[in-house]
Image (cartoon, rainbow, N blue to C red; front, side):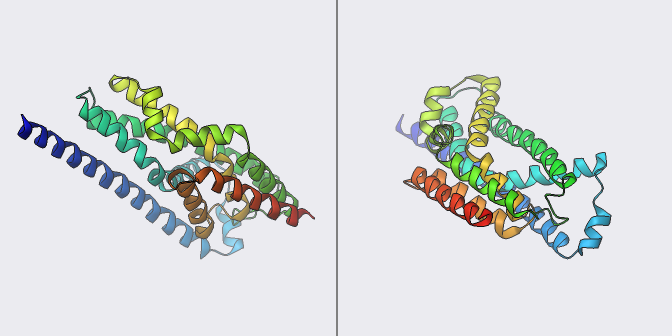
Length: 255
């Protein structure tokens, strides 16, 4: 009996390790893609960028892919604890799904960010058509930058931000409150968790329009803030501190 439990425990650990390695591999490949694309765009002159960028359906689709891959790179590390906990609970209780259920949970999560990427691409198109973004995909209007910073900073203090952050910071609470059995349930849970994460982080992603959609330092900084907000003790206070900083910078830019 004891030996059986030991084998089962090792199976859970092995499955979690495989899942973690898979998630880190996906995130790493996405970061490589983002790095390569950002480097390529950085080497282009403004004239080349203007000639390259025509909002055809094909270009729009390429931008959706770019945003989607970037969101996977930025969000997968902070979502890993939730995905791993789902895997452990499903496996320990011998529930239907296993690796497939875990994949569906992660797929539902990433699908929400894919829909966010579609929205972000449409917003980028509107901002470029309004001449608020430069060919380098960053704000070229100081007032617009200030307004985005202030709005993002205020959102960091909002009850919606804090409610979504609590659910992102509490994998066990989320699993306990929103558990759904079966493969369909796994996918639905992933969709719900993704929705909370978008609610938590969308305002931070809007700062990409200020610093540069393809600026690696800005992308990395936002990814680090997201990771710290969700994983370290006192992350909710970090969110408020970052909000205060964003509001201050926005006021400085406008004034």
